[in-house]
Length: 243
Length: 352
Image (cartoon, rainbow over all chains, first blue to last red):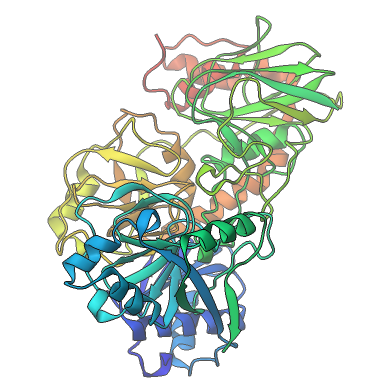
């Protein structure tokens, strides 16, 4: 994938990080190239590289300028990007239960109206999707998923909400996502999951990785309440299925 | 064991250390001290690891009381009046609080954050190697939130080691240096010049997540919505209203506004210490220069243990006193805080 993609641009992000940019828009091919470069960088184990942060369209590489300079690291990254992508480690798949609508998905009816259909139809289209974790960002565990049905794509809310609940499953633009912690969001709220993509005092603390596959299935609100208790106690709740 | 009680404390005060890098790919921001040099200097004075957990004290006053034994501490960072039961306590020096004594710190006089290091460091349950408070993520130990009066720390009893002071190089002044990018091409030359040639002030609504800047509106070439990409400490993003926000230690790990420039590592702490309302400028430098500065800054941190001096010469630091007095300020020979700021020209507006 990386091999067929035009060379990325190197952009300075201060003196200790560099952005390797594949695209300026949300682009599935670019995201695949980003994730491939991320794997290649991990395998290459370059002295001085401290961590990398994949996003939809770029890989942010943090490094220690006391160990490697901008130009030397840039050359190494471009060389990695020009090589065939290393094989993907076994892709993990998660089945994530969602309580759609009602108090847990306060925008479901409005989304259905806006798209001239029924709430059940919106849910059916949302659970039919085969999603990939394109990036995790903003707050811990916030998993941005690519692969949203084109018919569900709609622009974000005019007025973002300052507080949306932990576990919110929402759609915004051409993306859907799992929001782990309560916080602001301008997306349309379809439901909630008990799955914690980030939870302290659980092993693992972070559940999802960029590149993981995700599907959703609907559960009723009573099941959500039970799962939420179990999740609070440290259960993972999401079902892992082998790829 | 002794205890250190937070007798009083203002907002924006929390336990901080070197932070928890390494999990930004999961959306976890590293957090950590806003002024790493000041935390490291304070830790060094009491024999701790440079980035051990200490107390980051916001702009308001604070007081701490030793209980069940003596507690040895050191203060560095934004200068303030400091006393122990009425006798002045020197800044950038270690001091020992006897059982029952209270260290009282005034408002920050210039700057925003001071650091209290405790001999033996703050103890708690580390997550990803750090005790740093990140309130949004529920992280931080022993308190996963800003500190409040009544909080207390179980700490080592004072060792009785001789008190020390630390000789830091004179604070750098002048514009805050930046490297342009990663999205400086989202701005035309006129707006880049406006960014670099205008006076800016930090808004009072700033916090550990971001410093909002007041000044002219910076216009984008192609609108303000870009697709989110990764952020770093010191990323300067420009949202739709044109008022830049400099991302600080509790930033989101990704952001969707164009980033015109990035504050260099060696100027980040100095920038974090800029008082709200004090005018300053940015200056763009080359990557090579910025990386030289970053290496120099790392060297300065490494040199801290060599900068420790015996404490009994504090009152006789003639060079520093002369330096400060030349500028026409009266300084207190035994309170380093009164001359450090003047000598460096950093105190812009003193308290009344």
